[in-house]
Length: 336
Image 1 (spheres, rainbow, N blue to C red):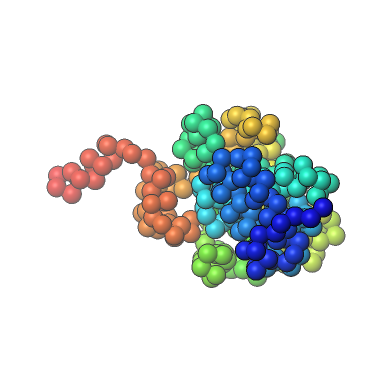
Image 2: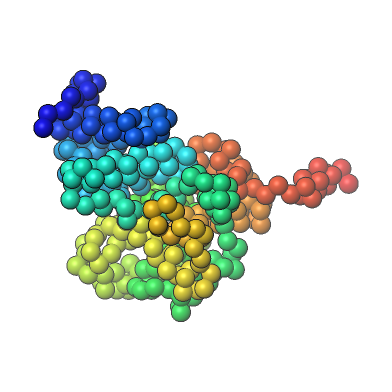
């Protein structure tokens, strides 16, 4: 069967990608409102560019791991907000359509959920309310500390205790913590170099000295040796039995499991695809750390902005509670 291929795609993409994008665009405009069709088509094009530049092959040859990589990239680029959500939805629609048209045998993207990437869900008013203003859910420190209790930690404990505590004490994104290489860690200064894809440069992040024994147990005392064939050769701090580098979705699963073991996790709602949206995920720890710093430790907002790697200080201000008594004290104390 022949299809009319849009010339704007043939100018930029290989013949196969141009064909798929043209067919997908036509299908979306025939079956969806123009606004949704435009958003999803644009998101599919953005994804196709990324996939082409990274892998150099047609999008129907992508794997679940490839799409997982893209979602991590998008979440990091757009702070998991509405823009990231639109790009997530566009790729989901693209592969759902390819599955329906039997271009691919199975739609592997159905098992990839927003919460594992810290991407907010703005689909319904109920969802926004349950997720506390676009996924800015935080939990108190006493609940965070339950996650690394021995009886709640999933195995291997040496790895997962360090992972969860490092998430809490640094506020790193799941997509950032998995990119930490052993050579990026300065154990004398208790500092880690974190690569920021937005600036294409590194930013320093410091961790407390209390984590030193955990680093030693994991790196120097045989903790990594139990992690399959990659334990002795991986350049990355965190790895799995199957891979020399952990994935962001794996980080989130570890946190969710620890929270369920502690009896503090819960399903907020079930989305339209039937996927459960959990209260406590890897990204929740980032929000919890930021909220704790902003409102309990009185960390200066511009310092917290640098800690979290935010481009816009307005993003950081979302963590600050609106507390009139604190504002009153700040204004009256100097003149008392």
